[in-house]
Image (tube, rainbow, N blue to C red):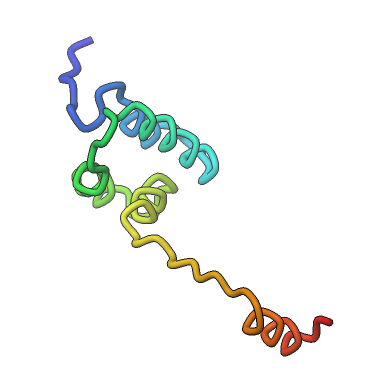
Length: 97
């Protein structure tokens, strides 16, 4: 085994995901989560994910792992809490009681 160790993917999880024929999006999400949990505490993930996407995504744009990596780079949705009167009015507008 003459594999060079990738500092962005030291266990080779992302590399191997791209090599698995017929892998599903759900399996890719699980692999990505395992990879992310292996990062050092406090590590910035966006630059690492960007490098992995550049390394693998261009050659496999339709691969489910490419979609997972792209989703990881997307900004998180902003959650807004609606309570009190505003929530009741929105609920009534939707037909609730």
